[in-house]
Length: 226
Image (cartoon, rainbow, N blue to C red; front, side, top):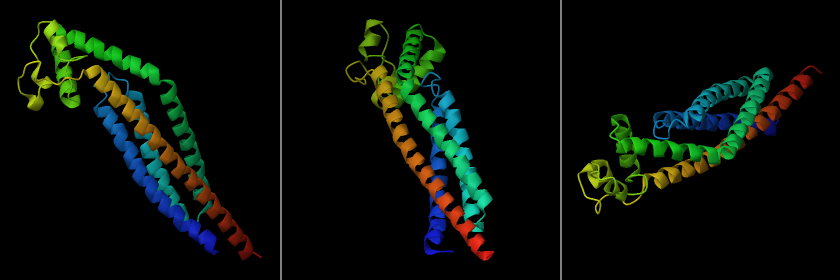
């Protein structure tokens, strides 16, 4: 096997190690989204499940690519490259869907937050528990600020205060939760887009090196039969 094909073999193996690490990150994102889905009003459930499935699939495919490279098995390499291409197309489709549905997701999130805070003002226990989680996590108070509780003649919740202690409106978090949660969602989507591009580039390089190695193995076998 020539120098370039031999190099392709080790580069492919190296890229698969990176792919395994990226797949672990994808699984982490999916699990994080599942755990925080309630905070976002259920808007993350479908993307979270998709990310978990893709993360598991990429891990399996990466090991398939490593095995194909070590064993110099063209069948495994072709299967590996084909599945990676399919996963790459799925990743592109998810990215496009996120961009297209961005405004709709934000609108659904704002509607959910509005409903939760309205029910919380009516002393709904479930909503008040969720509001406390949101205010503590995002360090915010009310939909638009602590004055919301003053207008509704409600005491400032401890979740609005630094350290979780009781406080008045002056010492409470000044930012409203509506903008805080929305900004966090936009930041998450931006990071998700960057991450998807990185994964896509790595997958594409994996496909290229898999085909280079497969072609090299084919040529070597042809020379061996001459």
